[in-house]
Image 1 (cartoon, one colour):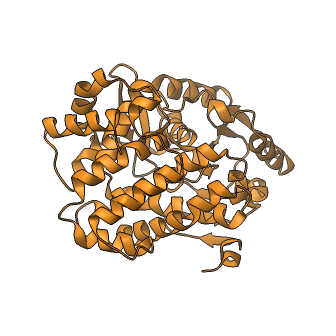
Image 2: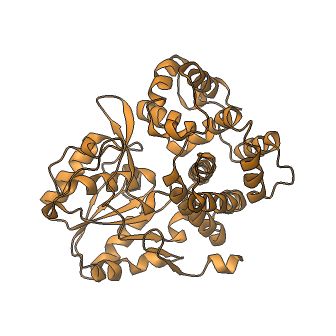
Length: 391
């Protein structure tokens, strides 16, 4: 694969229709019209409301004869009360679809609103651990279009969303098997203006997705293949994207790598996310940054005894030495180069939260697919180490 290949428009059909390539946001009006849409609700996060891609999106929709409105009351870690407000906006505005555009919080917020827009069910009826809610023919989910503007979350091809339960102070995964994006539009041009720190944080998130998904036990060659290719793309292009923010090949490689890693974690995740979800729910930290800080701590816990998988990950990253120690050292070197803080305490997470974060993390669905089971004592040690000195 050459840089020229990365810059060519591509239409993929797995696992949902995907339109990839620079400049493809310009097609959104015609694509919405082809889906029979007339008045989509644009869902984004608070920090993205006034960014150029929102006005560009509305212009393209207007040129195709579509009306639209914007709902942007979404926090970095979306809350259940915000989803309720979004549902009300969807209904009062007479909207017929949702376009989720932005980073991971916008993706999660848009998907959660989509789950609840056409029915009167409680948001938590869609919680991951519960049987799928019964959706009648008169309660069909509105069409969902996803447009990521960061290369990290990889949330654009599936229906799962992480939402903070304000009453419990915990994050939970919500989803429904009948909700799938009608289109994921991956335009690398939309990521060019992302600041270096956010490029690094979201890119590290994609790396964590690829690594954790690949380490999940079980036979799933589809997800394993995507995880390894996603890791290869991120390892190659993330440093370039941070160093050369206008490099379109790097931006495209990262967007593709993030997408692959996001699909891969349908297999599951691990303790990095289990801890990160609960830290984010309580302290509203940036998710990718939180993941990046925690990653080395969990790798030191998980990787001994997994030399076979480490060898394949090392090969994907073009490392000559495939030992566990060298792999972890390379990850730590990358995090250093990306200026990732060395401890959660550096981003405002206090030491006295370790007990309750550990207890909550063990209840997270991601903990159930970690390759090594952790006791409460072991989880507390992981959290304490991540807070004090992760690397």
